Length: 455
Image: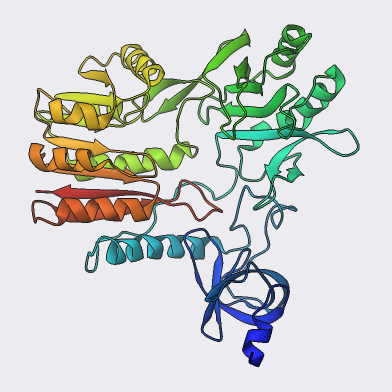
């Protein structure tokens, strides 16, 4: 065993310089030809690192000291930023965060999609990298001293970091985060224990309309046995003028999934109203709606500009949700057709269309891979917004058969986006015209991207 092997062991401390950031937001350094992944670092940091989880060619580590900080390092706005798992990048200068995200998209397109010099624009941003989240869902725990706590889990663990405010959520939610915990404590309601699968309250969910200011409070519960909840709910409505509804979401399963399938309204209404792109939407506790409303609107404007709708097109919006993009685009097209597997989302989409007086949008319930090949009307444009895993192969095959003139593909994961774009462009049927990343999740390594293909 040589000296390098002696050092390359769990618990050993090494000197390291961070030279890159990976897709998970961790710093990447090299020690004697081996890769070390270190959270809470940034390119240019020179560190002392304790090795953890050591393998032959790589290891994970933790910072023990910073003896030369990077020029891109900044002071976090949150006092528990180094512990809380809600944000990973508060220690990184925001302008540099944007550069890294653009670079990640470019790298994925080149490495996975086999594109040469892909046309990737600078990352789209709007108001602020703080105070932007319109939704927060906090696990509820009881501390060792019996105090009800709410917050986020420490990175890589189920140890809860208690929060009384959060700098990335809409600041109008902070008073509720602090005071609802106190009310749960006063009421004596039991808190869920995931190890024993006992107790009632699992999560506290808060949503706010960025433009309307309406707030919805949801308690995720195991069975819903909360004595006095109706009285307390009406007290909350009186205390918080912006609060419009209190809901219970029932999740009795032994699972890491936050929401169950059934939601009941205890007081007020089971939704907030929010304005988006000049329309008004109803947003329920478990409705998918982008967490940064203003940047989502800005990205829609890029989509509208790039598609350049003339009013005679048929546009299919695959994975359409509640019609957030379907309905604004319907105002510029002859007809939009939304495809969505969740019946509840389609029900909301139909309501949102009627509420906004939009008559040229229709919706179909089912999996995109089942509906798309059977479309009776050939689309001129297809908008894709699949889950992180990307499109099913049958969806891509159907697109190559349908041959819409334009495809806009929205993705929250650059690797699966690049894979699917590479497959669509491999035959020469489509060309990649523009790629627009957008920062929907400041202070994290996540990046939203829309890519535009034309035949």
